[in-house]
Length: 565
Image (cartoon, rainbow, N blue to C red; front, side, top):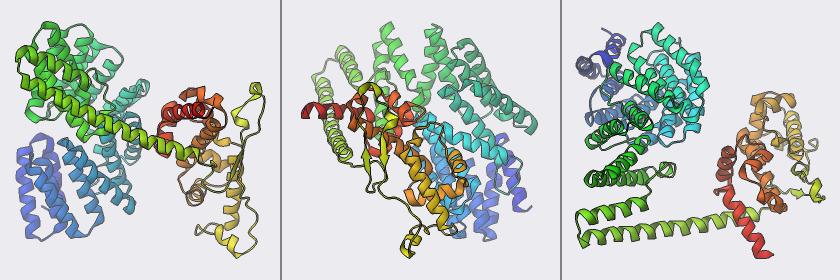
């Protein structure tokens, strides 16, 4: 058999007979070594990393990476880094996983390989989901789903469009559920079942039944959720524990008032954690409910056990996933957990040493957070003063923001007149011509014309239109999207989205600095004035640009006014 035939056999055994698959993988490794083929050896090692259990598979991810580097083939090296990242992510080693996935993404961009770019994007989205960044992940998944769907019937060796299409579709449906896009999931689920039927992907059917169950839970149809999730558990034919189904069956029973039943499912999650010592933060509320339940029935031993587990989980989340920790909606914060631990341990084991230890931990924790708080306050103050000292809102070039004073009842933020003192005129000499000739292949006259139109666009504050897009602007400027995008990137020093959003943020900054009336507006209204479609997008861009939240900036502005009044 040639290598392609061997690989097809290995692929067919992944779900049906993994033990037999390992035998074929061993043979493939031996054959590749004998033929001294680093390329086929890389592929064989990659298969080994997928078939073998932990921690043996880690060894094979490293071997695959070494073999790929020997080939000096950047495509294989990229795939090797991605493979290592995926294997690490399966074992919840998210930080190391993300490091490798991002390296793969960087290589794929250099190669301009859309297949690898979208594969890495898919796994970056999975990391974002783990961190609770469902909105961001959803955008990434839409792009992946569209790409793999368009190329569904493309046949290239070692490129599996169908698998990544169905994975992207599955993840997109679950992501839609989390952010409330329930209507979109109706057609997507129909599409998934149609694809499974036509392509003999029956082993994935229970995953989409599970998605229906989770969707039913988020729509408060708890009986349907239990029915669908239980059906999925019966149909799975793999080695995974499927905690997602167990968790949502438990939550559904809890919502229906069947707390004794719910607790049995949550205890299954705890048993799995005792075995693996890892748990997705999404399932954290199971421990909060276990603590609450055992408190209600007076079982202090179990209550203490679950408090200790929850504290251990939170410590791990805070240490390794600081971005995630702030997003977890906790019923039991650290302070409350320590107090409850103190009370229970006092009643069970009245030892002064334990109480002293907890007190010491509390004091040290308080000092840590106090120092962190002071450090952040100092940083925010410096950022605030930096913003206040800015003289303009356009690109850090010498411009002047002129605000015409009007009667309060006639005040309209759209009348804020911002003019750029650098006026673009026709190139008069070689120096000016060189300025407009920075982009190879683009006529300097065209560049000059578009820059003049951008200047007018900024002066008229048209960036505050929330429908504004690169396509609309290119049509208005009578040019195409790639040209306009290149000119903005080169002459504005940023991509179109950052360019528009920075103008909007700077516009709001000027309003807040020049008219105290706007300090009383809520974030949603300010976002709308600037042209953002929602407050979250506005806040995220504000924090990206200035490293502080808009609410904090407004608070400091008010304090600044009081101090100087």
